[in-house]
Image 1 (cartoon, rainbow, N blue to C red):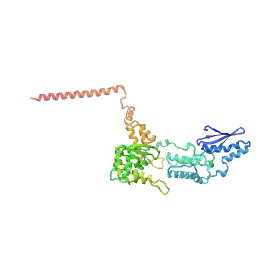
Image 2: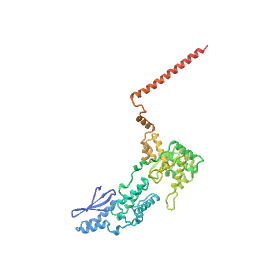
Image 3: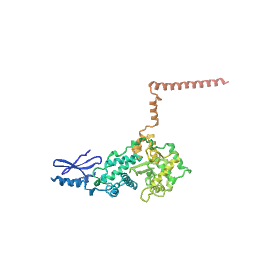
Length: 439
């Protein structure tokens, strides 16, 4: 649907379609004409529209047609870009994505290469890639047994890449259609989801981390990291890279600026966590609470890609396996195993314990940060006891009629009264017997 237009000296501009591409609309000899400006940037659209106005004011339809043809970039020399040259063009474009990590930047390149291989001809011109082509690629991705999130990430990154190719593609972005994305409910039938640890499992984790039988690299620091996860509800990276300057042991508070969201949260230090942090003080050798794990976590390969985060995560998963729990399981329709238990499960466990204890949801969010999905998951339930009452109500096991609600307490009172009479009678007979035995 077209948006509200902006009138110019001659003609007007407006956005249209899901990609919000700007168009220039004008009249020639009483006939309305529309030309795509091939940009989503308002300032750039205004600049391009200005180039039309002097010519539109002339009386020669031929001159206007020639100008429009040139402005739309229909000339072959100005629009020819092969798929094999797209990355070089995109990687230098001022509107390119600027991800926070090298790994994500490499994902962009790999996803583009996968798309080029799907097309089968790297010499294919960008202008030949149509929405129909993008739709065929999206259908292909569905056959590769990747998750919904991975599918949508690939489409989103290609949409960003093609948005920088305006002068070469002519028309709207082929990856702008929302039908290319998958919906989370497509995986509702997996039957696998992130699970919280039970209190027994949590206790077992602490036990294996304290014994000498089970060994893992930097075990003493891994133990601290687990305590941080259990008693603060923070993510793995926030716990591993926690610095002493963010801890006030006197006031017993921790300040965390979350790496994923940038949210700043402050958390009281529980007694158990305080004891562990005091132990960690004995090996303090720098800014990090867990210096060896932090160094391992920040390890990069020769290309600058972070590889240490996976190493620490594997150490964490090894501890989970010690208690007889398998972190990942196979799922139908998915190439990779689906994670059900991991360090992130401690975050779910934290939310679960808060919900059971009646902690207000707003208080939980002040600790976890803005993470409504986890909070909603546990705050939509009102507890096992209430659920049991609901099941009893629909199964007929509970007291459902007024007569039954009256009859049961009367029966209890009668039983207690009879027991009281019998007890008093027995006591009276005992006293009477004792009196008869006295000479």
